Image 1 (cartoon, rainbow, N blue to C red):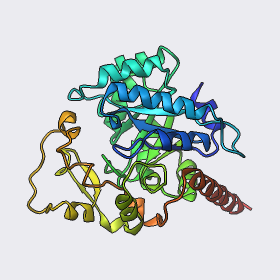
Image 2 (image 1 turned 30 degrees about the horizontal axis):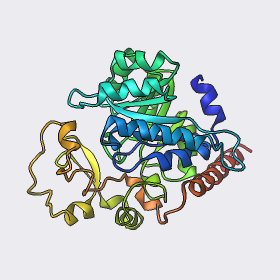
Image 3 (image 1 turned 90 degrees about the vertical axis):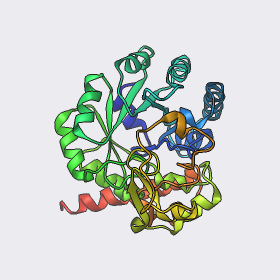
Image 4 (image 1 turned 90 degrees about the horizontal axis):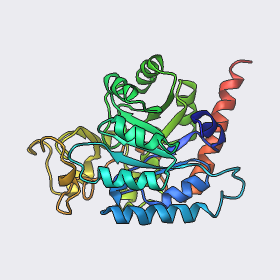
Length: 319
Protein backbone atom coordinates (compact mmCIF):
# COMPACT_ATOMS: atom_id res chain seq x y z
CA UNK A 1 0.00 0.00 0.00
CA UNK A 2 1.46 3.33 -1.04
CA UNK A 3 1.55 6.10 1.59
CA UNK A 4 -0.93 8.22 -0.40
CA UNK A 5 -3.42 5.35 -0.54
CA UNK A 6 -3.00 4.71 3.17
CA UNK A 7 -3.62 8.34 4.07
CA UNK A 8 -6.72 8.61 1.87
CA UNK A 9 -8.23 5.56 3.53
CA UNK A 10 -7.94 6.83 7.10
CA UNK A 11 -10.96 8.24 8.90
CA UNK A 12 -8.63 10.88 10.37
CA UNK A 13 -4.98 11.55 9.40
CA UNK A 14 -3.70 10.40 12.79
CA UNK A 15 -1.28 7.87 14.25
CA UNK A 16 -1.99 6.84 17.83
CA UNK A 17 1.67 7.09 18.76
CA UNK A 18 3.65 4.16 20.18
CA UNK A 19 4.38 5.11 23.80
CA UNK A 20 6.72 3.20 26.09
CA UNK A 21 4.82 1.27 28.80
CA UNK A 22 1.53 2.86 27.65
CA UNK A 23 0.62 1.48 24.21
CA UNK A 24 -0.46 -2.14 23.94
CA UNK A 25 -2.61 -4.36 21.73
CA UNK A 26 -5.92 -3.07 23.14
CA UNK A 27 -5.31 0.54 22.12
CA UNK A 28 -3.85 -0.54 18.77
CA UNK A 29 -6.94 -2.60 17.96
CA UNK A 30 -9.27 0.20 19.07
CA UNK A 31 -7.38 2.81 17.06
CA UNK A 32 -7.20 0.73 13.89
CA UNK A 33 -10.88 -0.23 14.12
CA UNK A 34 -11.62 3.50 14.42
CA UNK A 35 -9.83 4.10 11.11
CA UNK A 36 -6.54 5.59 12.32
CA UNK A 37 -3.07 4.06 12.65
CA UNK A 38 -2.49 2.23 15.94
CA UNK A 39 1.03 1.54 17.18
CA UNK A 40 2.95 0.05 20.09
CA UNK A 41 6.69 -0.26 20.85
CA UNK A 42 8.00 -3.81 20.59
CA UNK A 43 9.80 -3.22 23.90
CA UNK A 44 6.49 -2.83 25.74
CA UNK A 45 6.52 -6.60 25.80
CA UNK A 46 9.42 -7.81 27.91
CA UNK A 47 10.39 -10.64 25.55
CA UNK A 48 10.32 -11.29 21.82
CA UNK A 49 7.99 -14.23 22.44
CA UNK A 50 5.65 -11.81 24.19
CA UNK A 51 5.90 -9.48 21.21
CA UNK A 52 4.75 -12.35 18.97
CA UNK A 53 1.74 -12.88 21.23
CA UNK A 54 0.81 -9.21 21.01
CA UNK A 55 0.99 -9.22 17.22
CA UNK A 56 -1.25 -12.28 17.13
CA UNK A 57 -3.69 -10.54 19.48
CA UNK A 58 -3.76 -7.47 17.22
CA UNK A 59 -4.30 -9.59 14.12
CA UNK A 60 -7.20 -11.40 15.81
CA UNK A 61 -8.73 -8.12 16.98
CA UNK A 62 -8.55 -6.55 13.54
CA UNK A 63 -10.33 -9.56 12.06
CA UNK A 64 -13.47 -8.09 13.65
CA UNK A 65 -13.33 -5.33 11.05
CA UNK A 66 -13.85 -1.59 11.49
CA UNK A 67 -16.18 0.03 14.00
CA UNK A 68 -19.71 0.83 12.74
CA UNK A 69 -19.62 3.94 10.58
CA UNK A 70 -15.90 3.54 9.79
CA UNK A 71 -15.16 2.63 6.18
CA UNK A 72 -11.98 0.64 6.66
CA UNK A 73 -9.41 -0.44 9.20
CA UNK A 74 -6.39 1.72 9.82
CA UNK A 75 -3.05 -0.12 9.45
CA UNK A 76 -1.20 -1.19 12.57
CA UNK A 77 2.39 -0.26 13.33
CA UNK A 78 5.21 -1.11 15.69
CA UNK A 79 8.07 0.99 16.98
CA UNK A 80 11.60 -0.43 16.80
CA UNK A 81 14.43 1.17 18.76
CA UNK A 82 17.39 1.09 16.37
CA UNK A 83 20.14 1.65 18.92
CA UNK A 84 23.28 -0.35 19.65
CA UNK A 85 22.22 -0.83 23.28
CA UNK A 86 18.87 -2.43 22.34
CA UNK A 87 19.47 -6.20 22.62
CA UNK A 88 16.07 -6.95 21.09
CA UNK A 89 16.50 -5.23 17.74
CA UNK A 90 17.46 -8.26 15.62
CA UNK A 91 14.96 -10.79 17.02
CA UNK A 92 12.14 -8.24 17.06
CA UNK A 93 12.88 -7.21 13.47
CA UNK A 94 12.78 -10.87 12.43
CA UNK A 95 9.32 -11.25 13.97
CA UNK A 96 8.17 -7.99 12.40
CA UNK A 97 9.11 -9.29 8.96
CA UNK A 98 7.50 -12.67 9.59
CA UNK A 99 4.21 -10.97 10.53
CA UNK A 100 4.50 -8.42 7.74
CA UNK A 101 3.64 -5.48 9.99
CA UNK A 102 2.37 -2.74 7.63
CA UNK A 103 4.24 0.18 9.22
CA UNK A 104 7.44 0.24 11.24
CA UNK A 105 8.34 3.39 13.17
CA UNK A 106 12.06 3.54 13.89
CA UNK A 107 13.69 5.63 16.62
CA UNK A 108 17.20 6.44 17.85
CA UNK A 109 18.90 5.40 14.64
CA UNK A 110 18.10 4.90 10.96
CA UNK A 111 19.62 1.76 9.44
CA UNK A 112 19.49 0.70 5.79
CA UNK A 113 19.36 -2.93 6.94
CA UNK A 114 16.16 -2.33 8.88
CA UNK A 115 14.59 -0.41 6.02
CA UNK A 116 15.55 -3.13 3.56
CA UNK A 117 14.05 -5.85 5.75
CA UNK A 118 10.72 -4.01 6.05
CA UNK A 119 10.67 -3.15 2.34
CA UNK A 120 11.23 -6.84 1.52
CA UNK A 121 7.56 -7.56 2.21
CA UNK A 122 6.16 -4.18 1.16
CA UNK A 123 6.06 -2.52 4.58
CA UNK A 124 6.64 1.17 5.22
CA UNK A 125 9.25 2.74 7.48
CA UNK A 126 8.64 6.08 9.18
CA UNK A 127 11.51 7.49 11.23
CA UNK A 128 11.43 9.75 14.30
CA UNK A 129 13.64 12.84 14.04
CA UNK A 130 14.17 15.95 16.16
CA UNK A 131 16.45 17.79 13.72
CA UNK A 132 16.96 18.36 10.01
CA UNK A 133 20.30 16.55 10.15
CA UNK A 134 18.62 13.44 11.54
CA UNK A 135 16.02 13.65 8.77
CA UNK A 136 18.76 13.81 6.13
CA UNK A 137 20.37 10.67 7.54
CA UNK A 138 17.04 8.84 7.64
CA UNK A 139 16.21 9.77 4.05
CA UNK A 140 19.65 8.55 2.99
CA UNK A 141 18.79 5.22 4.63
CA UNK A 142 15.69 4.99 2.42
CA UNK A 143 12.83 5.54 4.86
CA UNK A 144 9.34 6.18 3.47
CA UNK A 145 8.47 9.04 5.76
CA UNK A 146 9.73 11.36 8.45
CA UNK A 147 8.13 11.92 11.86
CA UNK A 148 9.17 15.39 12.99
CA UNK A 149 9.08 15.46 16.79
CA UNK A 150 8.72 19.11 17.75
CA UNK A 151 9.25 21.16 20.88
CA UNK A 152 6.72 20.37 23.59
CA UNK A 153 6.17 16.77 22.55
CA UNK A 154 6.01 14.04 25.16
CA UNK A 155 8.81 11.51 25.53
CA UNK A 156 12.04 12.18 23.63
CA UNK A 157 11.00 15.58 22.31
CA UNK A 158 12.76 18.00 19.99
CA UNK A 159 13.36 21.71 20.37
CA UNK A 160 12.06 23.15 17.09
CA UNK A 161 8.76 25.00 16.75
CA UNK A 162 6.31 22.74 14.86
CA UNK A 163 5.74 25.24 12.04
CA UNK A 164 9.46 25.80 11.52
CA UNK A 165 10.09 22.06 11.63
CA UNK A 166 7.33 21.26 9.15
CA UNK A 167 8.52 23.90 6.70
CA UNK A 168 12.14 22.79 6.72
CA UNK A 169 11.25 19.10 6.50
CA UNK A 170 8.88 19.69 3.59
CA UNK A 171 11.58 21.64 1.78
CA UNK A 172 13.82 18.62 2.29
CA UNK A 173 11.51 15.88 0.98
CA UNK A 174 8.21 15.12 -0.74
CA UNK A 175 7.86 11.83 1.13
CA UNK A 176 5.25 11.29 3.83
CA UNK A 177 5.67 13.92 6.54
CA UNK A 178 4.27 13.38 10.01
CA UNK A 179 4.18 15.95 12.80
CA UNK A 180 4.48 14.71 16.39
CA UNK A 181 3.95 16.84 19.45
CA UNK A 182 1.50 19.19 21.20
CA UNK A 183 -1.59 17.93 19.36
CA UNK A 184 -4.58 16.86 21.46
CA UNK A 185 -7.62 17.95 19.42
CA UNK A 186 -8.98 17.45 15.93
CA UNK A 187 -8.68 21.18 15.26
CA UNK A 188 -4.97 20.96 16.00
CA UNK A 189 -4.69 18.01 13.62
CA UNK A 190 -6.29 20.20 10.94
CA UNK A 191 -3.82 23.00 11.65
CA UNK A 192 -0.91 20.62 11.18
CA UNK A 193 -2.31 19.29 7.90
CA UNK A 194 -2.91 22.80 6.56
CA UNK A 195 0.66 23.67 7.57
CA UNK A 196 2.07 20.87 5.42
CA UNK A 197 1.93 17.58 7.33
CA UNK A 198 0.43 14.45 5.75
CA UNK A 199 -0.27 12.79 9.09
CA UNK A 200 -0.12 13.70 12.77
CA UNK A 201 1.27 11.43 15.47
CA UNK A 202 -0.78 11.95 18.64
CA UNK A 203 0.65 10.60 21.88
CA UNK A 204 -0.34 12.25 25.16
CA UNK A 205 -4.05 12.50 24.29
CA UNK A 206 -4.16 8.69 23.88
CA UNK A 207 -2.56 8.07 27.28
CA UNK A 208 -5.82 9.19 28.88
CA UNK A 209 -8.02 6.59 27.17
CA UNK A 210 -9.63 3.50 28.60
CA UNK A 211 -7.55 1.12 26.48
CA UNK A 212 -4.10 2.54 27.30
CA UNK A 213 -1.89 0.57 29.70
CA UNK A 214 -1.18 3.66 31.81
CA UNK A 215 -2.19 3.36 35.45
CA UNK A 216 -5.35 5.06 36.68
CA UNK A 217 -3.19 7.50 38.65
CA UNK A 218 -1.17 8.38 35.53
CA UNK A 219 -4.31 9.00 33.51
CA UNK A 220 -5.80 11.17 36.25
CA UNK A 221 -2.59 13.19 36.52
CA UNK A 222 -2.77 13.82 32.75
CA UNK A 223 -6.28 15.26 33.14
CA UNK A 224 -5.15 17.59 35.94
CA UNK A 225 -2.01 18.89 34.23
CA UNK A 226 -1.25 21.84 31.96
CA UNK A 227 1.68 22.86 29.78
CA UNK A 228 3.34 24.61 32.74
CA UNK A 229 3.60 21.23 34.51
CA UNK A 230 5.82 19.70 31.80
CA UNK A 231 9.59 19.71 32.28
CA UNK A 232 12.15 18.91 29.59
CA UNK A 233 15.28 17.27 30.97
CA UNK A 234 17.99 14.68 30.23
CA UNK A 235 18.29 13.78 33.92
CA UNK A 236 15.67 11.04 33.91
CA UNK A 237 16.58 8.82 30.95
CA UNK A 238 19.88 10.17 29.62
CA UNK A 239 18.25 11.92 26.67
CA UNK A 240 16.20 15.12 26.79
CA UNK A 241 12.59 14.14 27.33
CA UNK A 242 9.35 15.66 28.63
CA UNK A 243 7.91 14.56 31.97
CA UNK A 244 5.15 15.70 34.33
CA UNK A 245 6.86 17.56 37.16
CA UNK A 246 4.48 16.20 39.82
CA UNK A 247 5.43 12.61 38.95
CA UNK A 248 9.10 13.48 39.47
CA UNK A 249 8.32 14.93 42.88
CA UNK A 250 6.10 11.97 43.78
CA UNK A 251 9.00 9.64 42.93
CA UNK A 252 11.07 11.41 45.56
CA UNK A 253 13.40 13.16 43.13
CA UNK A 254 14.59 16.76 42.95
CA UNK A 255 15.73 17.89 39.49
CA UNK A 256 17.84 20.64 41.06
CA UNK A 257 20.10 18.08 42.72
CA UNK A 258 19.64 15.10 40.40
CA UNK A 259 22.72 14.04 38.47
CA UNK A 260 22.63 13.56 34.68
CA UNK A 261 21.96 9.88 33.89
CA UNK A 262 24.59 9.80 31.15
CA UNK A 263 24.32 8.21 27.68
CA UNK A 264 21.12 6.34 26.93
CA UNK A 265 21.21 2.60 27.63
CA UNK A 266 18.16 0.66 26.48
CA UNK A 267 19.16 -2.29 28.67
CA UNK A 268 19.09 -0.08 31.75
CA UNK A 269 15.82 1.58 30.73
CA UNK A 270 14.22 -1.86 30.41
CA UNK A 271 15.32 -2.87 33.89
CA UNK A 272 12.52 -3.41 36.40
CA UNK A 273 14.59 -1.34 38.84
CA UNK A 274 14.58 1.73 36.59
CA UNK A 275 12.18 4.51 37.63
CA UNK A 276 12.34 6.20 34.22
CA UNK A 277 9.00 5.89 32.42
CA UNK A 278 7.61 3.38 34.95
CA UNK A 279 7.31 5.70 37.97
CA UNK A 280 8.12 9.03 36.31
CA UNK A 281 5.44 9.82 33.78
CA UNK A 282 5.89 11.45 30.42
CA UNK A 283 3.51 13.86 28.72
CA UNK A 284 3.63 16.66 26.19
CA UNK A 285 2.57 20.28 26.47
CA UNK A 286 -0.79 19.43 24.92
CA UNK A 287 -2.02 18.09 28.30
CA UNK A 288 -4.00 21.27 28.96
CA UNK A 289 -6.60 20.16 26.41
CA UNK A 290 -7.15 16.79 28.13
CA UNK A 291 -9.79 16.64 30.83
CA UNK A 292 -11.42 13.21 30.46
CA UNK A 293 -10.62 9.54 29.86
CA UNK A 294 -12.81 8.31 26.98
CA UNK A 295 -12.74 5.08 25.03
CA UNK A 296 -10.42 5.31 22.02
CA UNK A 297 -13.31 4.99 19.54
CA UNK A 298 -15.15 7.84 21.26
CA UNK A 299 -12.02 10.00 21.21
CA UNK A 300 -11.44 9.42 17.50
CA UNK A 301 -15.07 10.27 16.71
CA UNK A 302 -14.73 13.49 18.70
CA UNK A 303 -11.46 14.42 17.03
CA UNK A 304 -12.95 13.68 13.61
CA UNK A 305 -15.80 16.12 14.31
CA UNK A 306 -13.34 18.75 15.56
CA UNK A 307 -11.18 18.19 12.49
CA UNK A 308 -14.11 18.68 10.12
CA UNK A 309 -15.29 21.77 11.98
CA UNK A 310 -11.84 23.33 11.79
CA UNK A 311 -11.57 22.72 8.06
CA UNK A 312 -15.04 24.16 7.53
CA UNK A 313 -14.01 27.32 9.39
CA UNK A 314 -10.86 27.57 7.29
CA UNK A 315 -12.84 27.25 4.07
CA UNK A 316 -15.36 29.86 5.24
CA UNK A 317 -12.53 32.37 5.55
CA UNK A 318 -12.03 32.21 1.78
CA UNK A 319 -15.56 33.40 1.00
